[in-house]
Image 1 (cartoon, rainbow, N blue to C red):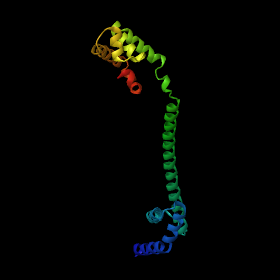
Image 2 (cartoon, helix red, strand yellow; image 1 turned 60 degrees about the vertical axis):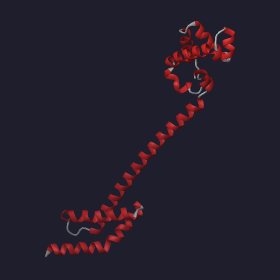
Image 3 (cartoon, rainbow, N blue to C red; image 1 turned 180 degrees about the vertical axis):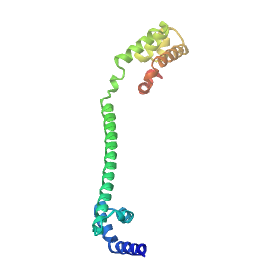
Length: 189
């Protein structure tokens, strides 16, 4: 009969206090579904641990204390999650700001730095003299294929051949710089 009495007592406690417990939890967690889960979990916690309570304990106060701790745990987990999200957002913002600053500092006129120009010069120095001369006339002096052909007494096909030959050498030497070179199609393509 004692088991039946316990069940009756629990049902009475549940009916008398559940809505108050849910309201209390909802005041702090701000979500009625979560508040109801916390209240029911707290009632179940009481039921499972009722044998450990001293006789005459204030059961509603005990359950309210359990609810308080469950609400605190929930809010602390929520705060930790928000801190992680904020941290990741700050990392993304930092990376974005770095990209913006780097791009703003990028000076297209300086893309051909001394290092890059040195590589170009070394590559041009490896070319046969006629190939180098035709390439320099075309790319540095902006002479047309026709003008170069007339000045050197060769055909325009010969001019095109030597420019293509020079470009192949430069593409190999400057392969690591291709993202930058895409902005200078007249020079390399």
